[in-house]
Length: 257
Image (cartoon, rainbow, N blue to C red; front, side, top):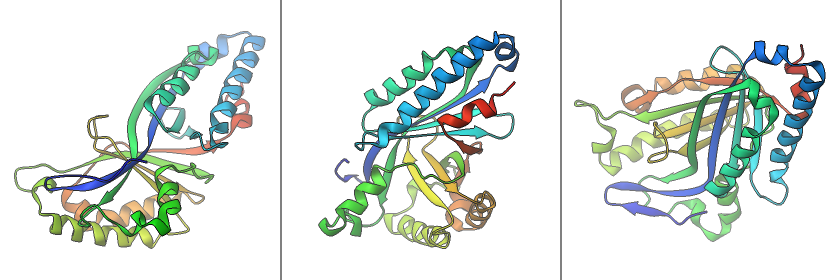
């Protein structure tokens, strides 16, 4: 967990664990062409690597989760949270060396860091008080929720000639984000959210992960937020990726031939 930093007119941020989203597309023809024994061995090896990555939560060394994606944008999404970029590189390389990845092609990746903003607070928020230090750390170094479904999308704020988020005053941004946050609170208990910042790390400015046991909640919360001014006037959205949580023991069922 890093200290709060402020730069000029920019709101402070508190940064936690680094995040890497890796999306893969399965080469089904190549996978089917493998001898049955080779397929079985590759699946067992990949499942073992999944279990090892998921075990990072033990000892608070990080968190990993895997999802079977719906649609044509990819087949498998891996989400890894680790304290350092070096730790992310290790887990990424571990899967790159897996025999099964000979039949998988990376279709997208996203690098970011778990981020909390301190809009309008002068670098101090209730979370930064000593009494709530544990709660703050849990938000910055989260264990990925066990929810059945996940929705990931990148986004940025508009920097157009007529409307530019970054030219608003701190007070204007604070008020807009306050009303935006109130919508999110209405979904407490239905949707869990992790926001990661990616300025200087990837093409978009933020990554948003939503987790729920009812996937319809993704549509409801995003739909409602689209009518909020901060989204309606200033938000730019990338592609949306929705998947079902799979554990190490589920891979064979999804890749069954």
